Length: 138
Image (cartoon, rainbow, N blue to C red; front, side):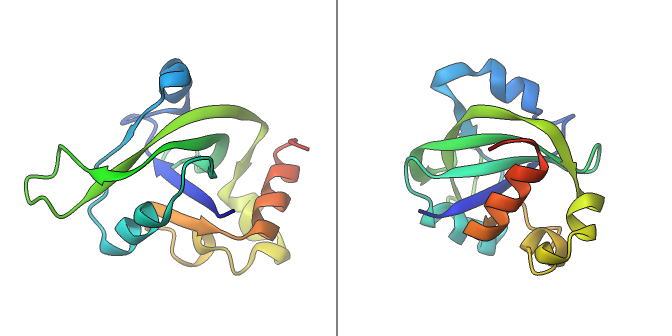
């Protein structure tokens, strides 16, 4: 099973809005980077990812699950990009800030630390377990 990180500016789409979408979840659209597109294409139903508030907050605030695999993004006029659907699974008990992630030596190779602009990122199993623990999730 693969793990992921989804970045969103809270003013555009917040964790609270994701939670409000309920079990039906929502589409994760607007990705216009080819590397991020490859990440979306690799996602399988049932895989989980961190929901990360970028710009404001800069913290992992929750966990989402992929509920629909890659399909065309209706907001992309070029037809080159797609999206997946995700639903909220659980909030982090303690938001895990970017500063806290950068301060943890075991996370020095995390994509978030080294390519913070990428909107959809892979997360290793070790990084997944450590960030969950830092956020108070068992």
